[in-house]
Length: 304
Image 1 (cartoon, rainbow, N blue to C red):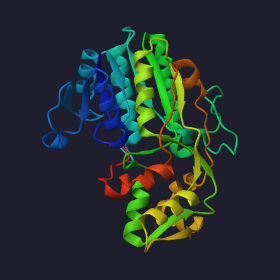
Image 2 (tube, rainbow, N blue to C red):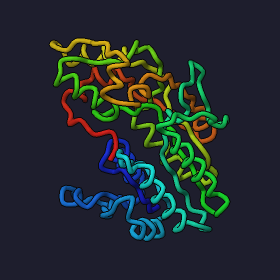
Image 3 (tube, rainbow, N blue to C red):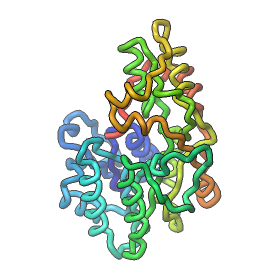
Image 4 (cartoon, rainbow, N blue to C red):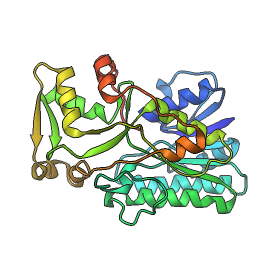
């Protein structure tokens, strides 16, 4: 199967690319042109120079492929606009083909779950303002079934594993400042997912012809910022102390992202487990840190 994939120079996308290739598929990886000179030629990988604004390149590549897996994000003020452009370009190319289009959302679209695990069945009536557009895009892709496209969206918890994911920024800051920070009390619980089973979920959705709709992606592990701040100090010390960062001060530095970091977001992935036979078995956050992968690096950015 030929698969157009985005985000392949980032953490989750790179591991998904490897997982698809290792399972016999050919990946057409959309990457920014400045990355091309630094990318090695690989069997069953075709590097396609382009970005989310390049409608013609996206449409042509999607038309050549059997599936589209959209993992990348621009992480700037144009993110919603660029994501919209990518989705519309793919929809135009795949219309009435029966091909599968899998996009990536985030568990924080559920906003604060207030200690109650959320599944995919309930509509999101109050999405977090910073990620409300992702909830809209989820529904837009899923609704493509009306146009002959098997649409699906993955909502992962915090992604970690193999020296990548959200932990990398925290580790960088702790090493540079000697302070492992947690915002507020740091007791808000959040769901997590290791990048290996996440990669497998993308593959299972693509290869299972009945898979469509929204799929949460989380292991049974939940963690809180105070705990992983402590783990980082333990594994990257001595010389690093755990520091409480008052929410008011964090807001001055991070804006609304500070409040986003303080919500409790617990999700269940029972649907993927029961329908697709997906098993999110992987090392815990503490195990990954204790094994030293984040110490020896290289640390991989969250997405790109």
